[in-house]
Image (cartoon, rainbow, N blue to C red; front, side, top):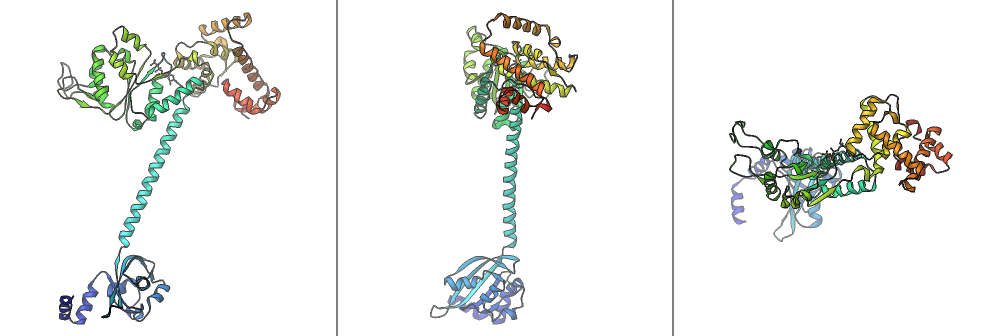
Length: 475
Ligand SMILES: Nc1ncnc2c1ncn2[C@@H]1O[C@H](COP(=O)(O)OP(=O)(O)OP(=O)(O)O)[C@@H](O)[C@H]1O
């Protein structure tokens, strides 16, 4: 302190004033009651009033005039201790101000010195940062909504309301979020690939590739290089630059190995290594690579039988079979036939610019067919009849021979009282009555009234039997 006083004594008062006036920070000196005694040039510039109008005025007046919000000097006087606050000066700039008490010889407050630093830019940067953070948050929320909507649209394309199919979709949802191997089994054309892609879309890997490899479609001699790639010059005829395999291409995403039963035996151990260690070695390579992939496999063969007959490695089978999903065939989920027929009729009508609709007889025959080729066969058949039918109303004669003979068989069974259960027969009759009522009355409200049931009950039945409403009937 004494040293400071000695040094200060070297300066003339005018020099000290000059020094204070060169500071970019504001210095504002008041007495212990808040009356302004002096302020430096920076402080004068900040408040926009000439020094002569400020000196002698109390900070409380200046605060009321809106020059300082709040006055740090007043805060210091009220609290009796040094105070720091953010101050708005003239409703424009933002300042970080600190008020200090300078005591007299007896230790009583004599002067209040406020020191202010312009933080307008820093505050702007910080509020810009806040805005950017808020914007990023909004974008990320919007992306999440878009992702969810995309998934919803995807699940809307999933046709199936039978209890077994709905249970399957529930299982798929759970399995999708667990990042482990899935084995999808089921007959040909039941929708295994469709589900595999759905699992990928619902998983955290949805933003990365979904690589579909049909193991039966690639010749045995090529499958290893297709899957794992090769180093340059690995074999005669190999590309000079080498080749990236499908495993590498699926990095961060999902590798879907369709018809896994067709994977040659000698490659099964290499796949097992990939499943266990997530590592692989390209043909002709000397070092292993890591692949961050999820594997989904599918088969319509009985893998366990293949294990028993020595054609499929048992260790690979157990490694694949961690989360098995079985897709039931169409004949075990007959409730899905009508919805699938109508979904595909709508789809192919739009594609081929037609207005086809099913006659009751045609629907009946389609409903009783066993669909050995499952959803794929149904899809192909609907497209074919949309193109080849003679009239807008698809008649039984428009159907292929095998379906017509089924209907003949069904009719005989019906009249002879065959093995068709009472519930099935009642449901069939109910469906037909509803279809006829809709045809005659042209609206669900009138048809319900004519049948003596509520409109909501009628709507539930329409849904149950997959009856497609014409636009004018939909009210
Ligand atoms: N639930 C469904 N809703 C609508 N379309 C479906 C459904 N399930 C399958 N499909 C359609 O059925 C067709 C056959 O499906 P997919 O190719 O997935 O069968 P798959 O079981 O993988 O056949 P494969 O055993 O021959 O490989 C596809 O065109 C698919 O779009």
